[in-house]
Length: 162
Ligand SMILES: [Zn+2]
Image (tube, rainbow, N blue to C red; front, side, top):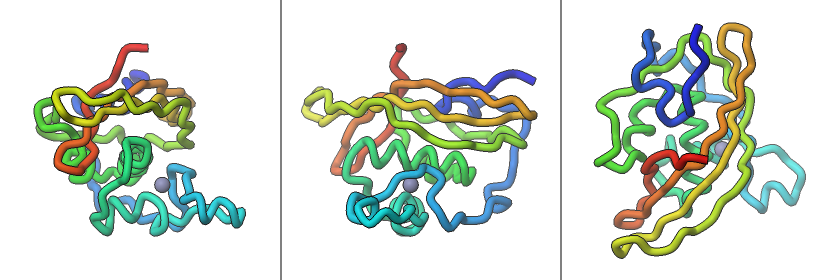
């Protein structure tokens, strides 16, 4: 069994596909995040209050950090449509395949920095570690990702070498 590649490209050329419908929507958000207001009360974030707003309800993430969290959650939910929709189109793969049996264990955001205007568009970078278990082996996926805001919508561009 090969170890997973970085999260953003791991499943582009996977050997097996899975049905997106096989994953139930969770009560608590897989990304572990919470809006500040909820965090202050000490409660855990529900999916509906966290990434569900973007994945299920069509709201636009306000920044690259929220988009990154929602894309992690979309990987957990095997939501190909959302992942492709939030991929900058010149870098977007034609389709995604998910690693059967992968169990996502959590997301840690290490860094989030706005990187200024490039060709008139806002950009940002997010560095994260995602933990996943495949075939009984736990693995850390460490990546720094670039994002761009086009027409008010943040999009994933590509991984940056770290
Ligand atoms: Zn979330």
